[in-house]
Image (cartoon, rainbow, N blue to C red):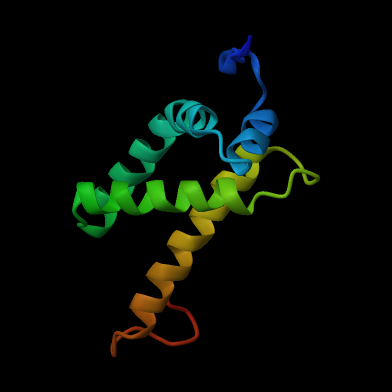
Length: 113
């Protein structure tokens, strides 16, 4: 007789959920996503208001970055929440900086000014 034990994902820490997600557990990925969906929505709204982007495209891109932060997180270093926020914010700034740097009227040495 095969007995399957289902973990209560609500009781696990972020690092434990990330470890399970990296091993392919779909439930752990979903739990992490639901936990940080509000953060992703807020960041998407900021970009929509400040940059005039489409919400659906922006939210989709941030969800993709979120999944990559799950896959690239090193379990030995710090907390997942801090890493995920830093990873997403850095990617956003890099992308905006690259786009502004291509504009002829923006100074190349200071694209965010």
